[in-house]
Amino acid sequence: MPNQPKSKEIIVTGGAGFTQHHLSDNLNDNESAGNKTVLVTGGAGFIGSNFIKYWLGKYPDDTVINYDALTYAGNLENLTGVERNSNYKFIKGDITDYKTVRRALEGIDWVVNFAAESHNDRAIMDPGIFVKTNVLGTQILLEAVKDANIKRFHHISTCEVFGDMELDEKKMFKETDPYAPKTPYNASKAASNHIVMAYYHTYHLPVTISHCANNYGPYQFPEKIIPLFVTNALENKPLPLFKSSQNRREWIHVLDHCGAIDIILRDGKIGESYNIGTLVEKSIEEIADIVLNILHKPHTLKTYVPDRPQHDKRYLLDPEKITRELEWSPKIKFEDGIRETILWYTQNEPWWKKIKTGEYLEYYKKQYNI
Ligand SMILES: NC(=O)c1ccc[n+]([C@@H]2O[C@H](COP(=O)([O-])OP(=O)(O)OC[C@H]3O[C@@H](n4cnc5c(N)ncnc54)[C@H](O)[C@@H]3O)[C@@H](O)[C@H]2O)c1
Image (cartoon, rainbow, N blue to C red):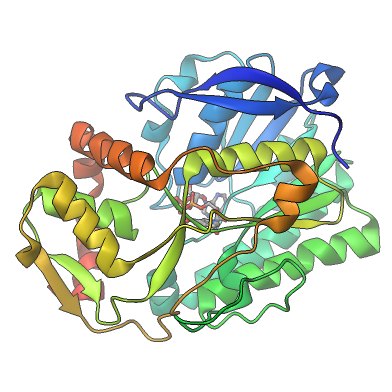
């Protein structure tokens, strides 16, 4: 059970230019237990970079090491401003490289593993790299963590490991449900969870896992649906909707995800996994309509493209455990979060314009052929 919570007002900045959120959070006595050095893998990606800013904003005396291979999805511009913080350090490295990881783990208290190949569509084109990074990479990282005697390893997982459900189904995924992934990305994430738990049971590694819903917010790579729709709409380009546009996802603001990880790191039980869900569901069609309405763009921009193979219909997480045991609940209302997110992409055109060139355009043509 968590320690008795103390309510404290904190200010979290979600990255340059993003509106500050005043989040009332539960902080516990562990906070006074000394400063931590946290190694964040994949910290140059969307969620990892938001997490680093969240962490250094909330715990300014802690040190954060960002360990990232800088794949196509890694972007140090996501951390502009942070590099001047003396409590932040970047190490370019791959989680499949034991030697470099092991060296980076010197003096580390906690590890949070965000590093992954993360895009379902790309996994269909090239599943091998997903198995290499997400499965083998996680195992190599765990091996190094075991050898370095790390006090906590938190693994970032996804709702997608549980498989999909019917649009009208009356159920939610529970942490104890069997994994039933149906796509190469989902399978690689499920496999990595099994390996994390194997290290817990076999070597007593102090691990926790969280399964999160679909994230949205600033600095998300514009191949993912929300920044894809927003940036295409801003360029007056078609919004590619998969034909099964009623398929829906559960949405969470990235800062709510960061807050949940924080609470799990502090109060979560070793060897346990936690769902991080909001119960806020929106279909692809609804997301396109919301984006077009907020940007005052014509709905004729919606263009239907063939479904990707195994286009999962729906995922929904039961957040009962994290609510009851750790007293976590999301703070950012979808209507507010999506408006601020769209505004952020509107105001940060140079950031996404630079990405939507070269390799991105090649991928885009191959994926959508429009
Ligand atoms: N985005 C979502 O909605 C969502 C939802 C639930 C869970 N997740 C999980 O959260 C994590 C982060 O997702 P994201 O959306 O920020 O992904 P992202 O693709 O934006 O970022 C991934 C980061 O990992 C780095 N990386 C990739 N391979 C690496 C390797 N071999 N070694 C070191 N670094 C490597 C990349 O350079 C990049 O910076 C992933 O594990 C993903 O599966 C994402």
